[in-house]
Structure formats: structure tokens, C-alpha cells
Amino acid sequence: MSFFKFGNTKTLLSYKPFVEVPRIIIHKEKKKNNNKNITGYLLSHLHSKRRNYCNSLLINLPASLIQRLQSVQNAAARLIFNMRRSEHITDALISLHWFRVPEQIIFKVATLTYHALQGTALPYLVCQFSCVVAMPNRRRLRSASTTQLDILSIRLPTVGSRAFPVAGASVWNSLPDDVTSAPSLPTFRRHLKRYLFCRCYNTI
Image 1 (cartoon, rainbow, N blue to C red):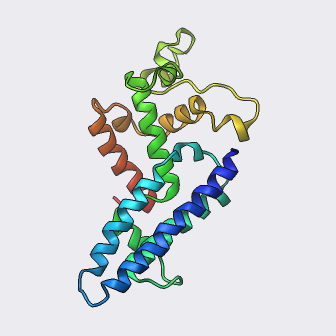
Image 2: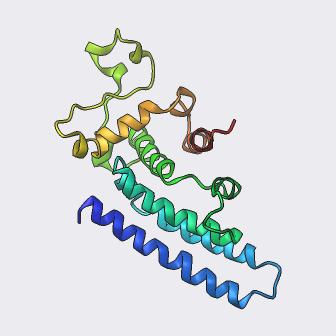
């Protein structure tokens, strides 16, 4: 299956539970005051489960395909808050603490890279990265004093940039030092979430 076909299939499968199931619940619970809470809980669970499934494979795909997946997330948020399509969606996403799709992908790739660097990933992923500080011919560079990774050269940017050793190193090098130098996985995830949330919505 190609990356484009995978992205299209992921979009189509994601729409069904976000649109059909919550409407059934809303219809059954329309006389109760907690219908938004019930729908929000269900959508949050389904959304987090489906959005995280193999989403690291979507790294560096065309913006048009990513926008299709973003439309799924926007539809879920509008359904929870009973919003019209013409209403701005940013405030709803912020209140739900949902990343936009690009940041979701970056979070997954960065987490996999952290596991690989810590030796807790699968064996074939652990050996995919080289730290700049460990390379003799790069020790005098400014990047040698940081946690940056060496990015492999590629022939075809459209395809090679999606390879995990290249995409993982590129994402890792784009993160601030306080994120990449985290001593543990929980601390790394917490700092990464804060950084991506601020970058996503331009909040402090």
C-alpha cells in the first residue's frame, strides 16, 4: 500500500465513528444535560486511538493529504461543541487539548526517536541514528556540543525524507534542547507536549 493510499484510507475510516456513533448517542441522550460530556468522552477516545495508529508513516506527506486528516479532527470538535462549519475551530481544539495533525505526527516521530536513542525501541530502530558529538570529523562544529543527530544524505527528497532515519533526525534536531535533553520518557513527553502545543497555537 502506498503512502497516499494509506492516508486516504485512514481518512475514510476515521470519519465513520466520528460522525455516525456520536449522532446516535446525541439522539438517545438529547433530554439529558450531560450529552456533550458523553459525546466528548467517546470522540476523544476514538480520536486518540485512530489518530495515533501508524501516524508516524504520514511524516512529510503533501499538505493536501494532511489537510484531509485535519478535516476529520475538525469535524469531531464541531460535533462535540455543536458548532457550525463556518465557525472558527481553533478555540475548540485548544479547549480539547488536541494537537493539529502535523503536530500529532511530529509527536509520534519524536517519541519513537527518543526510544531509539535510549535503546528501548525495537533493535532495528536503535541503530538508525548517529549523534553528531560521536562523529570525529564533526566535533569542532557548534552542533557537536548539543544533542543533535546526523542527517543522512538522500537522493530523492520526496521519498527519502520520509525514511525514519532521516525524518526522525530532522524532527529531533528541530526540537529545543530542554526537550531533547529530558532524562526520562515522562519528562520528555511532557516537555514535548508543551512545546508542540505552544507552537501549534502560538500560546505561551
